[in-house]
Length: 265
Image (cartoon, rainbow, N blue to C red; front, side):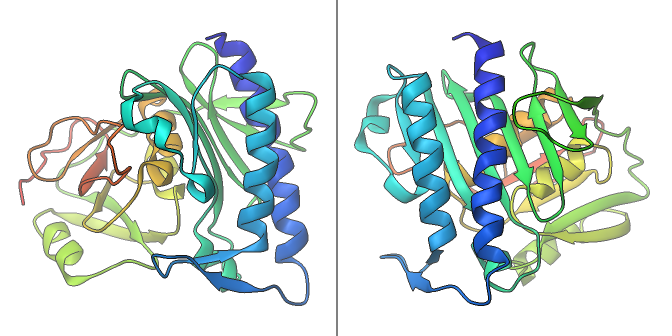
């Protein structure tokens, strides 16, 4: 894989998909449908998925592509593939809360090694560069030209005063019970894969997820966090979270900055 080309293609497609999403987001109304698992889907999910898929297939025709809206059985035997969540945080989108993201990642041998996370309503763009380090691009976010990039890095956590980030839409008692094992200075709520990015930038230290997620929900954020020096591990035994599972479902997990005294369940 040519990682410089990959970065440029993923970045541009994410920005273009963001425009598609925001056109629908800013409309007076939009239809919300239910998928087979009762999760919501909108025209924005479907249009962004179609645009990103077409772009990735044109640029990388020999690489397996998995997207949330058209999960494809080729992943059953693949450990290297592109994976897309065209609109992570559909509930945030529907309620017009702004915490939704476009996510594109490249998984190699079961690990997400490159990724882009774009929050179009917030104007925040995070991605891994060709060398695997993570940046946040600031400014006008032109599609054809990369602007000013700021290297991002995880914080050095203070185990007596941690900053924890948790889901806006999926917070529950099990999550709170686990968070209570730590000395927490403050908590933030965020939707979608932005939680990974807040750890990657040092704005938070710890994100435990005690709930269902799919690989397309996490791969891009996982890649960005890894490129910023962070880790994502299974909740139950603290081994690295692996991708390419037959049903795309993740176990519970913890994303964190190194130096945290991780607690077992």
